[in-house]
Image (tube, rainbow, N blue to C red; front, side, top):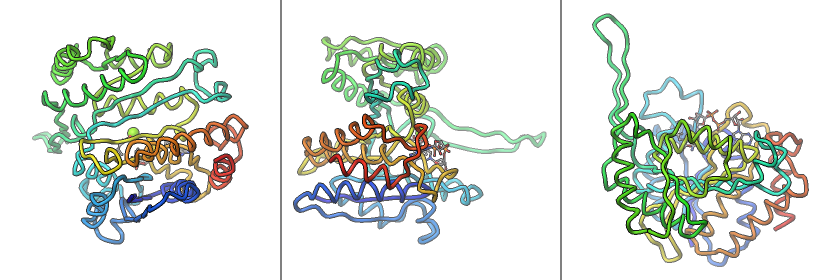
Length: 352
Ligand SMILES: NC(=O)C1=CN([C@@H]2O[C@H](COP(=O)(O)OP(=O)(O)OC[C@H]3O[C@@H](n4cnc5c(N)ncnc54)[C@H](O)[C@@H]3O)[C@@H](O)[C@H]2O)C=CC1
Ligand SMILES: CC(C)CC(=O)C(=O)O
Ligand SMILES: [Mg+2]
């Protein structure tokens, strides 16, 4: 079993250290761990945010554990050299088109939700976000008009097959959960969304046991706050899924709690190859202070154990340890508490 660990920038190394301690405590037989450079750290060392050797290391692994990238010191660089290109590049080069972002209320945390506790208690949803297309990967340009104004372009596109493959992932996920799928788009305005809706409806024919609904993204943002309990699985495009999942994190209590899996089609000896990361970024505002909540990172490790290593029992064990720590009142600053990164890691390890 091979895991590649890319800690990245900002709080990435701090939260990765805690996930690595949890991984070490599991003492998995035959596990080999590799470390690679990504993001601003990689740019400084190798002149590129995603060096070829890092990509090779990812390809050679059964799963990748990824911290976060993003460094304000790199803001002036040309776009292709910025740290964020590392994660976009990995998702694209590794064909990781399906992003699973679960958001479930933890017992005892209801009062920390941005929503009323009785509404928050209902949250148990999975956002299935398309990860290889949309406006993030379309052609981009910046031009200067005759009158001197600058104009930026980002081309938004989806091809039928790109929508179909993520729709299949979402229907299968709904079938394995409560059988309800809500497809979120902006089909009243966007051609990409009209195609999205048409293809999701076509694909539904293969999953008659799943109840399908459609919602415009602006309404979905509102409904997520008003009545999140109505959602089981939500399937949506890259941009909408990015935004809705950050919003969902505050419904659960903090962005420091939400993990994710980026999956493609490649199978390994143990499961599906994937990249696992918290949904948050490098949090430069708290980096280096030992304040970041490592739970999203640790829960991402649990997803890696489940999907890429086929170790369901270990995954559940890690998830139980995190839930128990929260139930026992362990709280980072993001949840109104005082526990630091290391202390939260200790609390999870003690309950493993
Ligand atoms: N996958 C990735 O590597 C991602 C990278 N980014 C990058 O990260 C950098 C910062 O972006 P932001 O918009 O500030 O988003 P962010 O998610 O890094 O931070 C947003 C807010 O949440 C807080 N926060 C995030 N994670 C936390 C944790 N584990 N514990 C406690 N508080 C936490 C931060 O302190 C900040 O106040 C940018 O360069 C951005 O491009 C953003 C999102 C994803
Ligand atoms: C850094 C961005 C490219 C991605 C992002 O915000 C995300 O995937 O959540
Ligand atoms: Mg995001």
